[in-house]
Image (cartoon, rainbow, N blue to C red):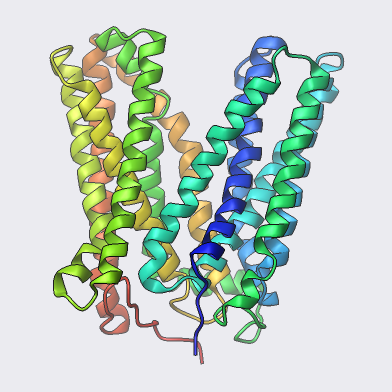
Length: 452
């Protein structure tokens, strides 16, 4: 009989996600500021290093494959966190060194960011696989919400405490703060994951099929229509999700006359909406699990419905921002941005929950490869999206004289990407019946045809 972990163990795994967020925000936020302000380096340099840490995450399928072959996720999670923390320290040391030996220091920081991307790939991919195999199907949406909220908390707490401890700034103080954060992240990870894998009968043991070469395993997963189309969905939806990150605040400033402080608050309004959207989906999942004997409950907790509906709502909200560019100051910008955040949060949790469900469908002992493939698609989309949004904005401004119209054209394209994502999510679910016979709803999946 399959055993699943309880909420206490889910919260423990959430500490791993929070620890990852703590190290990543140290390098992508704090070190970025030190390079640009204290060292007076071009902003392009830390930007390229952050992009590199996304690029390295194409290794996620290989990291998942390694744990598939060994049949255990815990060593990969701990090893990945050690690599991530080590990369964080190397990046910090390189940044400090760059003050006196610029080329050597930046080279060391570059190596650190390579390690950060590698560590995130190993730790993050296998953490999601452990969650997927250890959490009961009806709890996957709420579990994903809890883990992601803890990651956001890791971002916020680290940024706040690091900012407090770094004043007054000195290189020595930066090294001390980085060392404390990295050491704490590794310690929490080790304490959090020990024993969790053994507690769930679904996760321990050896690989369930004869090991094959990584290239063959990746080809096998890519030949599974649901896995392949879900990869495309993740890429398109995350591209739409991330493309507006770097242009929303400039849009608010140039079209609506927001000050830097007001535009920063607008970003906070959006993040508040994301959090609310996540909590709504989690609450719906818990109600569905509690009243699952009622037909309405299964629809309320349908991850498919939240994924498709969230993408559609995100597309409508993006279209609203496009109209805001044309209408101007009369448009309720804050309400629109808050609605976008709620829709983004809802579809994100629906997609993550669906990802956890689909990881175990298809050939046996390929969960890590599938999760890694989707994680790589997400990382590539985030890396491209941040650049694409700004490039599209520059092109639009070159072609269109009005700032509002230029931004409106970019937001409209993002709305189309969200609607395309909704169609992909619907097609994946509908297509499963044709590809593999009938399946039940997202909370109670029937495995697809397994390898013989």
